[in-house]
Length: 212
Ligand SMILES: Cc1cc2nc3c(=O)[nH]c(=O)nc-3n(C[C@H](O)[C@H](O)[C@H](O)COP(=O)(O)O)c2cc1C
Image (cartoon, helix red, strand yellow):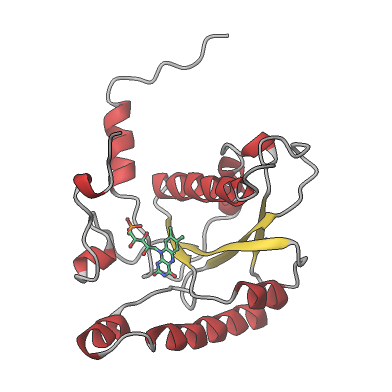
């Protein structure tokens, strides 16, 4: 079977998508159009997974009570996380916006099924974490697909994973991977927020690339 031939300019457009992906914490409150989330989850399901196990489990948080409980939980964990910083670093930390959970129209929790039947265990016997790696692949696929249609995604990890399982009433053997905020961004940037706020620059290539 012959596959598609990507037209001239496609690689440059993909490059623009990668360059402008961004982690988004500032959202408009307007809801996503009907069917958009399912469209994005269908795209996420195109991601590779170990043994084709497809261990991603997505939970839409529709309940206002559960969302409020999650926001309260993240705020409490954020205060605990802040305690390790002192002086100017503490002031810089406090000035960061680390989630858009209040405004984002579509909070989405992502879990990893830790013993999925699909895939029959193929490829993960020596490295069980390949299941969680597979879920991250799905999240990144969703992230890019969302950005391609103007939707921003923000990843929130300042949580106690066990508490999130409890708050969302999901099985204990689903391992929490991410809390995502989806929505239309309130602003667009080519540079990551943490770089713009001088928290952390991008590393030079020689710190991340090696030869042996
Ligand atoms: C595993 C993971 C966890 C993250 N957790 C948070 C978080 O809790 N809060 C936040 O604001 N951003 C979080 N981020 C987003 C990163 O801060 C962001 O990706 C990084 O600063 C680079 O910015 P960019 O995604 O816009 O390129 C997380 C990203 C990843 C991949």
